[in-house]
Length: 241
Ligand code: NAP
Image 1 (cartoon, helix red, strand yellow):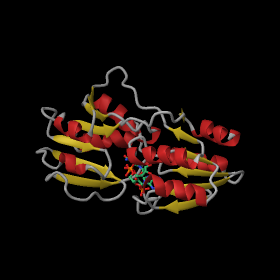
Image 2 (tube, rainbow, N blue to C red):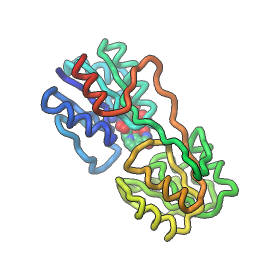
Image 3 (tube, rainbow, N blue to C red):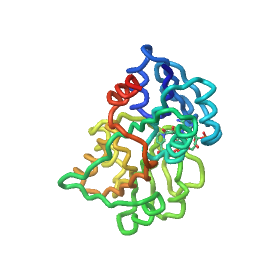
Image 4 (cartoon, protein in one colour):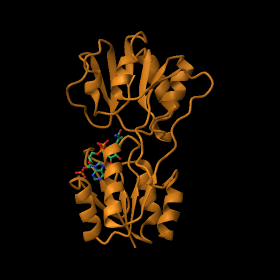
């Protein structure tokens, strides 16, 4: 039994740990992070060269099942996986953690894209806490506000003219997020709807501080791919294949 996990998330790492060493597991990482946390089992790093490259890799390495455990915003690799699994005739499962849901006292503004999130900042204040990752800052490059950009690795230009970069990697604590929002006198938080527990405390801290949150909604998922919400369910599926 050889399971290919398309990874880059905490859930993918947990899943590899659940399946290894009972099954042969290869985790695939895109190679975006300089020093990634490595999962148990075998690891390969770098793109496959589109859906055809992924299908060829699956065939060459006698993969029995593919689990797409990539980040909910990694849209292209998920579509590539759907196409590759169909052409290589291997079962595919998507592991998607649930999105965040606003609670009482939350002031959330939906945005369909990073560009919409940038436009939504009009009138929300001058000091923005931007947590959408180091890619895609170009969408905010023309904004006049001051930005605190938090990311694992340093972001690259183009980015807003008034930017302070904070290199850090979750999990984050509620106490730490409260302190950060207060110290930088943050007026508005911008986040993707990643749904991760490790990064959720910023939402509670924003509610407590009474500041709005611009939430970038998830891109669509490929049709016809079954999905589960937890690594445990994904591991059980792999063992049934
Ligand atoms: P993407 O736009 O969906 O993918 C772009 C290309 O990167 C894909 O076509 C593929 O190249 C390669 N790729 C992506 N994930 C890969 C993987 N797990 N293994 C091998 N190749 C992969 O992806 P992205 O948004 O740049 O994200 C890249 C990785 O970072 C993902 O694995 C994701 O889980 C992780 N991540 C993303 C975010 C986010 O906000 N987007 C946040 C945290 C972690 P080829 O076509 O050449 O195969």
